Amino acid sequence: MNVSGALKSKKIIRSDFYLEQNNPNPFNKLTTIRFNLPYESKVTIVITNSYGKVVDKMISNLYDAGSYNLEFLGDGLPKGTYFCHVIADNFSDSREMELIK
Image (cartoon, rainbow, N blue to C red):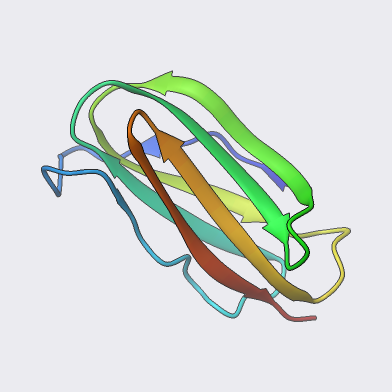
């Protein structure tokens, strides 16, 4: 699996923590994960399979307030259901992602 760095948008879109649904979903190879931080936070993003096994720890870094886009490349993974988990301070959320090939 490959991942590009989180790219910050130029403006804060929301004033709260938020994880959007990946786009596209279902995806074939590449999908974008978007999240928002209302203030500087340590962010951890992991991808798990439907059994809860971690297949990729995408990031675990400190980020400034803002909206971010992160690309996830599912090369090497079998088709199926995966989950994107975001943890930042007292916030955590997950989204279901469907990899098709």
